[in-house]
Length: 496
Image 1 (spheres, rainbow, N blue to C red):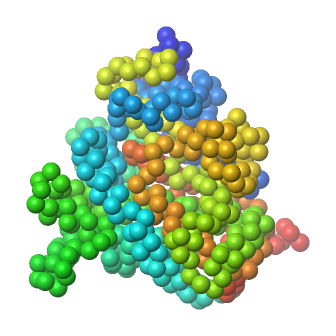
Image 2: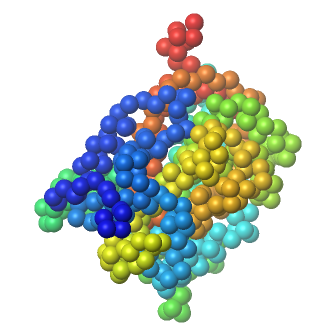
Image 3: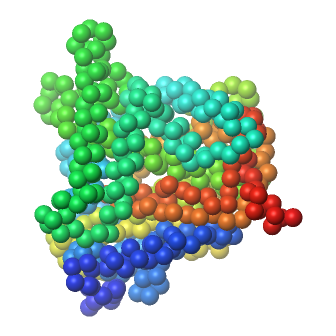
């Protein structure tokens, strides 16, 4: 690669650059971030990429253990990988940490199996199905707002609240249960995610690593998660077999159960596939929507003018009535706010691919077995795409659509639309509309601390999760007053 002008940090025996990356992340996350610099999260979330891209160029070579990885931040090369016309850029699903979270399902699989699982998921996320989910979403939001009445005059940890909200929405709409029924699965997935994340940059030795505390616990969690999902599926199956229910249901679990029992072997899926898809949706759906809602609320707390605009739109669109699916799709201001929030704080900051044989990418010849890290965060913060105000929160940049906002480079906001993207958008729309229906908040915040846990997992590189807002406290002043960031006692002293 050096002969083609691709440079990078030196390879270190066995570890590659894993230790350097780990140390950079640790140092970046050890320091709080001032609010004035809050929207420039690149040096916090991916400090190694910022440092090495400045030193070696937009595309450079790094090593994760003995695996070479070409890190790509150049738009034209990212477009080529995403287009993948010849199907040569394969999902990196073979790594153990990917399988621990997503198994061998839609997220990481390829070919005929991917087509089969994608069709099942598309059926569940069809527009008509999404419309039927809105009442359940509204019910979950109403339960959250009712719970907030107990916090009047007190602080609310909104990230935790949104975690419960999104978990409840997923449980109701996809699995016909409730947050409390699915709580055990969510808790185990959170713990498994933490273990996998913390060990991502640790180079594991064969055989020996199998007997470490983390490996033993993660294996146990995997088994317990699978067993819990099997129990949930068995309950559904027993109701149909006993005649208590006439079918498996129209939710995601029902569709998977129907496919599992399909008489056509070509359409049939295994119990393992069913468990994998349920686990993937529990994890990915909850993490992405939770992150989106939390960052959006924070941005609206800071930019009260936009919260007022969103509130006006919500009130004018629905008044005292509950939002509808069709109405949510017409919320222009709230849609712009969500797009801008996702641009500045994307739930996914990178994804990985690999090539099995020699491939030509742009002007580069990639050797066989080369790994690729496609980082979309630099594109979200590129002034050549978004303009010189790229680090400012300006939802109006999306007023004429994504193509116009990205200077005719829609690939700058991501590639293939996730199969669950629609339900994420509808959930965020319902939550955003409900939260914007109160009176405007006041805000005065000084510092934020971002603690990033990054999980590279095929198409999901979950970053900026478990948010910690150091100086920002949330004060609920009645359910109709919305979310109001308020000052800590130390802040009040400084203000005086």
